[in-house]
Length: 156
Image (cartoon, rainbow, N blue to C red):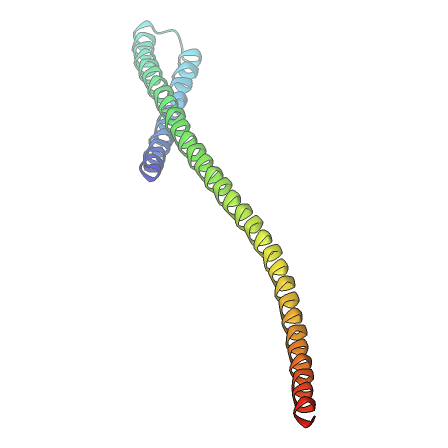
C-alpha cells in the first residue's frame, strides 16, 4: 500500500510541476498583455480586443491556480497517509522490539537461575562424592579390622 501511495505522490508531483509551468506561462502572458495595454496608444478597438484577451487569460490563470491548489491539497492528503502508515509501521517495530527485549530478559533471568541451580547441585555432588569416599575408606577400614579379628580368632 505504501508503494502505491508513493506512486500517486510521484504522479501528483509531476502534475503539479506541469501545472506550475502552465501558471508561469500564463502569468507571463497576462503581464505582457497588461504592459502592452499600458504602452499602446488609446485606440478603443485594440484596447477592447486586448482586454478581452487579458480577461480570457486571467480566467484560465485562475482556473490553473484552482487546479494547482487542488493538487496541493491532494498531495498533502497523500503525504499524510504515507506518514500515518510509516508511523504505524514504526509502532509495530517498537512493539516487536519490546516483545523481543522481554523474551531476551526473561531468557537471561532463567539462565542465571539455572547457573545458580547448577552451582548448588555441583556442591551437593562434591559433598556426596566426598561422603562416598569417606564411607568407602570406612568400609575398607572396617573390613580390614574384621578380617584381622577373624584371623586372630582362628589362630587362638
